[in-house]
Image 1 (tube, rainbow, N blue to C red):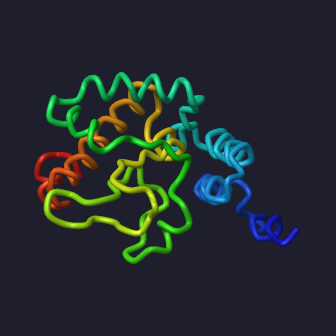
Image 2: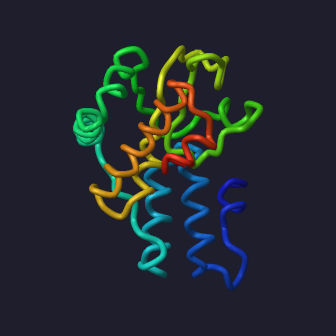
Length: 176
């Protein structure tokens, strides 16, 4: 009951799409995905231009899209995938958000493990992997094609970390 009161908007803010979207993001972080989608739908109803609906994909559709994107990557990245697999998670874990430095809960992907020369993020229990966060990717585009593009950029970025590139170098390559 206290959770519900905390999410109830102050008087006059019921139709604030930013507040409604934030409510959806909080619900999503809590694992309450159906309720979150209700909030995203409401924000879209209020302001469809600035608050598009997430592109929801079931596990099979997401895997199919991922396989197509992986097949389109440069050879050096496809070879890296053999060494460092991709794991799909709904959202970043609470452990990641609480780790120093904290991981943004809206991040699209994350390289976990040892890159060429140094540790990037250790102590997660995953080993060397690239994590993709499905719910965040689904909200990153207005269409399946845009989600695919965001997925590709995210994979190039995260495998760039595996290959030893830092954030500044990835930004310079257009993968920031």
